[in-house]
Amino acid sequence: MRILIISSQEFFRQAVQAACLRYDQNLVSIRTSDSIGQGLELAHQFEAQVIFIDLTKNVEAGLLAITQLAQFKNRLIITSADKLGADLMTRAIRAGSQELMPQPVQDEEVHDILQKAEKLISEDSTALQPKRNGKVILCFSSKGGVGKTTISSNLAVMLSQRFGSGSTCLIDANTQAPNIAPMLDLRPQHWLRDAVEEYVRLDSEMLKDLMAVHEASGTYVLAHSTDNPLGLDFSEDQLTKILLVAKGTFEYTIVDTFPLLSSLNLSMMDLADKVYLISESVVPSIRSARHNLEMLSQAGYSKSRIEVVLNRFTDFKGNVNPKLVEETINWPISHVLPYDRNATIAANNGQAGVLMFPESDLTLKLSEMVDSITGVPVEIKPLTGFQRVLNKLSNLLE
Image 1 (cartoon, rainbow, N blue to C red):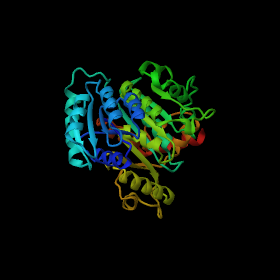
Image 2 (cartoon, rainbow, N blue to C red):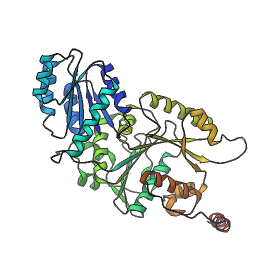
Image 3 (cartoon, one colour):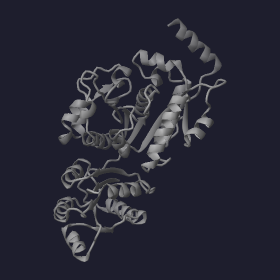
């Protein structure tokens, strides 16, 4: 459910956003705007399904905005104000508002409205906005070098293996240090910046045209070029449109991110069905993960939305074990991926490790992550002791 909150009052935006994020009946993606003009643009680009609009500071402009926003039949508009009198209530309903919400904001009222929105969206057969049925999976950490890119690219390739060519796309949203293209030995003709430049008129066909295809798996890749990094010029609105189109085009969209808990990454998390927070069992990574999770918890993200992945784990005396990591970060660890030097060998060869070493321990664990994404387990047989010895000898000879 895509939710837009329009208000010049920061406390109103924060209160409604927190209430929406605490709604556990459905996945919500949220955007906010502090002005009516920007709100109208966001409603179009974000394809908002539920819009909370606060008329406290600007009644007349807000009523005109409601008239424009109400043109979409499968959109629920909720009007709020600090003094919601009978006259204002009547005018808001005539303009096209379907719900009225007094202030201060109460969780129960917001949740009741979202339940009505679910029913409206599911029952309206005259919906004018396209359905977005694909899943978005985002890999994040505010500490670099923890293996986000390796995990992202291998998950995308494995999903393509299971569901066929064209089922999965991989987006390199690491705006400062992109590495997806060399990781998969791709030489794209187009880049993420091309999609950004065309984001207003971007559709499924154009998005596919701007992507490179990883021939070995059939994964569509929107790579990012180090020659012309977007950096701060890369806006939330542009990324939102790209992810929405990808969500409506592919069954699965995997996103690699820049290691910073920024508004840009938060906007991507709002659109993600699942966020993998990647960490390692070393103190700097654990401290970073704990800080990230504290900040995301305060923002309203739950343990069902964010899963912690402990990467490159090795069991030796003195290492921090997963149980202790869980106690330290106060968050369950969903997946433990073993250290595997085959991942380095594959990366140096520009190949996906799950293709180059299909029966390795790391591939087995990544397969379990894919199982959790799809809900459909697939058995991969682990290597025997003899096979492990052969693989080691083969690697040494190479």
